[in-house]
Image 1: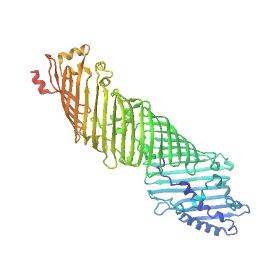
Image 2: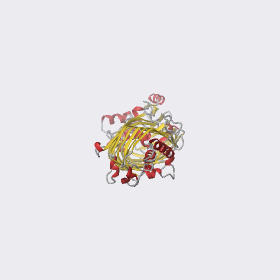
Image 3: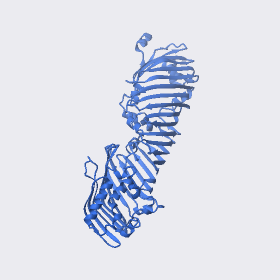
Length: 609
């Protein structure tokens, strides 16, 4: 949240601006017999020197008294930085205040009333090193700001009644494509009552998305009471993202001691990058409730309950903005996590596959390498239950470590089919074309789980495992697979499988037909081996054998991962004699997403004859 860079130490900037207008007040007694014109000239000179910018006052009028002076200033202008559109950084139509003269002698500033009419402040950042609020008085070694902003709250100026009418604050950050136009009003003390406060509302754009803010806070008199936190409530809307904060500041001048209830909802967690520079993945709609705190440069958050898509989410963490790059550290938990809500991690948009072209299987949404370089992170996610239609996934434990554009997913652990999957993924986004390395091992998976809710479930079993080692380059998963090299292997030893599946693969009509009409049987699996080489985006089968007591299956395959095409053939060799065993190879061809299954027509014709 600090990444939308406000002026560094904004309280100092405002203090210097205030000091510009009050710098000569401490010499009031010496000039009490001077003319208003002479005092105006002195104030303009001292203010210009301190700000390093031209300060002009259209008119100054002082009504002197023995105990109190009534001061009115009109048309105040503090020049803007050179080469910026607006001539003034600060302009105020009128300032009116009553000040106790004798209190100045003991170093106290007491005003029975202070009124600002149409104050306008413009903060503008043109690049990382150029900001119009970089005043000489804020340079290192200059103690002006330090002296104006006291450490003790009780040393703040005492104001009986404060009125700010039609105030304007404009903030522009060209590096973030941020433009804000805010309206500020305040009525505190006196007739308004001690509990009156201020309102800050406005609109603008952030990265070409509509941005709105509606905030209100307590009385500035609360700043004088150290034991009483300053209340603040804010609603921020950016596009479809909505943030609500309702809490207190221990020290709003220094932006410290934040303690607020947090409500956060939106259409896509990835949009939070514009507010925080944290590279969240693409997600479906989310809604979370929790708390937000801030100690120094460390933001702390806790999510008591949340939802991302149809998955529940809770957790806690921190965001450290003290360094050149933000560091996001968090631990999340989910009791029931849906795989479809995780599509953004591999490049699928929410409700993923339906948005791909009908014949495409691998997502081709490019990875935003700029975002991966913006902040660092250490995030873990533990899902007690993992749901994936069609896949026997059970749980997941994963940790993401991002350091200067290098993303390491380790460990990557999940339960599948009663067994385990374990590995790691490395994505190097330090170059414009990322490189990805994947090493994944599957162990002791139960074949029966892959036939859940089918007639083959009770008649299939046995453990198998495998390993995938793949390296590729590209900005999307589709690009990585299209350039990949590596190896895929699966191995099974022992178990059983439905005889119907084996018989049908060999087109043994005499034995398969009765099984379809009657009770199915099983056959023992002796072994199974599937070994593939991945080379330049093509997958080649080195060995594919599935041996049972009834049939031996042998096959060969070639898959074009770039075009997503497959050409495969599997041939069955029954070990028994059957009058209608065709032993005709099965073929698999066409698009991976929807391949065509058939038989080799040439061999089928010969064998039929």
